[in-house]
Each structure stands twice: as structure tokens, then as C-alpha cells.
Image 1 (tube, rainbow, N blue to C red):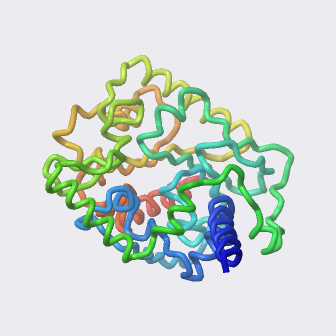
Image 2: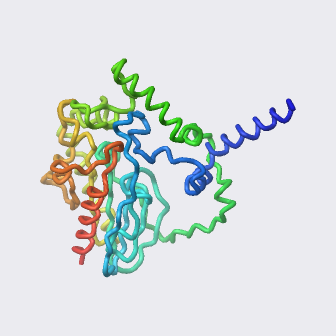
Image 3: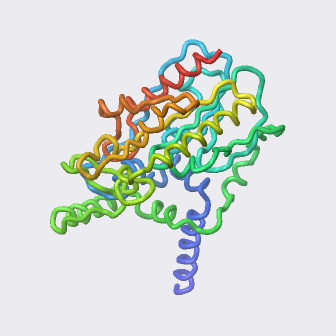
Length: 328
């Protein structure tokens, strides 16, 4: 009996370790509803567990596009444009290729026809991403190979070291455990006057914000930015624009997604107006797909999340499609 318990515990904790290493396996279990996605109520709710910001995720409807145009849209983006939010069905281009803006991507061979590159980045990472010329997506004489891995190969596609976050998500993502976390979070807020250090509440307490946007540092909306740094970023953006034009793109766009704090962080500090200073800079050559003004006027963010809601996402998608259609 003792050995049975011992080996059962070994198998159980070994499986948890495996989940912490295999993203493919955990994704498969989420899709089968065996594990619960702990982001399903919003990334900021996940960090804070404050029940007033619990906001069940809903799938955004996709506008029907009657006719696709003969073009390829290349999108280098971050979490705002991840596959679970946005895909080829949202765009008017016949072809769509996605990459990550934050890291180097496999090189591609450009196909014939109209080619548009959109570099999308959230405001908090704009400064770090353009301290130099952005060249994270080289276009060379290499064709991206299709993913031909069999399911079992993906299943055991381990990533070492172990990722504790995946383990915790598997263990603590269930509703009854979240309820316990909510009670603790409410006690800390109401009695001790504290919330999780990774979130910040707006001055009126009605909105929850990501800590990077409010705490001191290069990602903060309130970190002072000298004119010299703005000038350097504009130079790097212009060089990025020239670089991809020379590689064969018909047009290259920049799109900056405002932090939620840009809208709801009034009273927490003096806003540095980073987006406006870049987008309206007289020396900027790269055309901009801007949503800053719209997002200042409306309510386009999810209640328990740092990302946009369906209405905000659709504003951005519509502007991307307008830009694609403009390119001759």
C-alpha cells in the first residue's frame, strides 16, 4: 500500500512537471475542457482575483468580407493580435502571414503581388522595441516550411526549463479555487488596503490596470521621455521603413496600441504622451495606423483585462483593411 501511494504520487507530480514543460499538451487539455484556461476572465483578473473585475471572455464576431483583394498582409504583432483574437478571416487580403514583433522570426521569401507589412506594438513596449532599427523579420531566399509535426511529436515537444506558471494554471484554474482566491483578494483590498503588486487600480477604483504601465520604469505611461529619445526612435522607425521597402514590401505601416492606462490612468501621474509625440512627429516617414484618438473617446477595453474589447478590436481591424485597400 505504501509503495502504491509512493508511485502514485511520483506519477502525479511527474505529470504536473510535464504540463509545466509541454505547452502543446496544456493547450490540448484546455481545448478539451479538461483544464480550465486561467485567462478566461481576463489577464488582470487573473493577477488580482478581484471579483468586481471578473469578465468572462467572449469570442468576437468576424465581419463577413464579400471579396478578398489580391494582396498579402504581413503582421508583426504582440498579444493584441494573437491568433486567438485575430486571424486571416478578419482581413481583406487573400493571404495573411503572422509573426511576433518581440523576437526574431523565421525568414520568408516574398511572394508575387501586393505585399503590406504592419508592425503592431502595444504602447508599453514601444520604447524598448525601437531603441534600434527593427529587423526581426528578415526576408531572404528561404520559404517557411509548413508545420508537419505529428500530434504525438507536438505532445512531447518539451520546453526546458520547467515553467511554474503552466503548473499553477493546471492546478489552480478551477472556479471553486478562484472563489477562494477572490475572498482573499477582497479581504486584502477592503481590510488591508492592498491589491496584487502586478496590478494598479485607477484613482476612482473603477478600472484595473497593468503594473508596468503605472510603476516607475521605461514601460510606464508616466516615465518622462526626453526629446532626444523621441528623435532617435523616429530615426529608427524611418530606417525600419526604408529597410523593408528595399526588401520588396509595397508599404510598411506602424500601429501603436494605447495602454489601458492611457485612458483610465488619469490622476496616477503625468502622462508622457509617447504615442502622440511619435505619431505626429514631423520627421516620421513611416505611415501610421492610429487608434489613439478613438480609444481616448470611447470605452474599448475589457473590464478585467489589459486588452481591447470586440468594439475596439474591430476599429483597428477596419483601419488595417482600409490601409491594405489603399496600397496600389
